[in-house]
Image 1 (cartoon, helix red, strand yellow):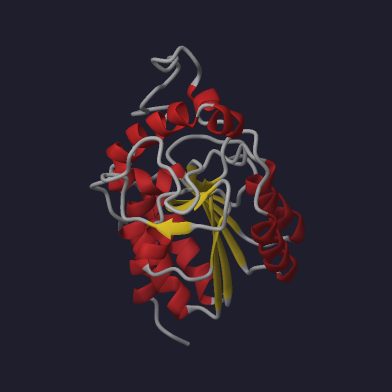
Image 2: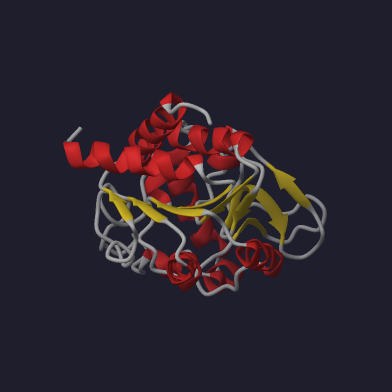
Length: 260
């Protein structure tokens, strides 16, 4: 580990000593150490190619496509889920869950739909894009939680009314869930002592805005991401590391510091 990185980790652990509340904003990069591919980008399933149905994956995974051609949307959902099926949460998720037990108030705002934060033990969770393991009927109140899609007929039909079933996730072109936005707004109004952005490119305004607000309020901000993002030039500390390695190192350094 290079000297500058060691100093940054020491600085972060020192900041944590004076903190009571923490916000973690996480994206696909935090699950990369679990072996999960993204559908685009390095190691992505589709990169810049069209799907075999001749459309961008964003169109295949759009809310309108789900309604009109659920068999197409479910075809690519299954491809993505198959690539994630054997994966589990990693050390980064574990550290965040452990921090929730140590500090007075820790919240996670995640874009990921893999359910890893919850599986690792995080309870104060805003999964703003939903959870792929939770299914719901598009015609009635039926819902169910599944471990995976292995035994699902495609496209799945509701056992109660026969209408197509969907995962409780936000597809392209759909609105974010109102209840989760309300929770996020409530927590941001209370504010946090330190803000972490972990493994996200921060392209969506609701993901970058908490970091921008923290900067305006003079609260410390940390980005953990090997690549440059839209907020890299704004944060106080930038760690060019993978999420699991970085958070484990921060947590170990924090544990070594003498308690006041």
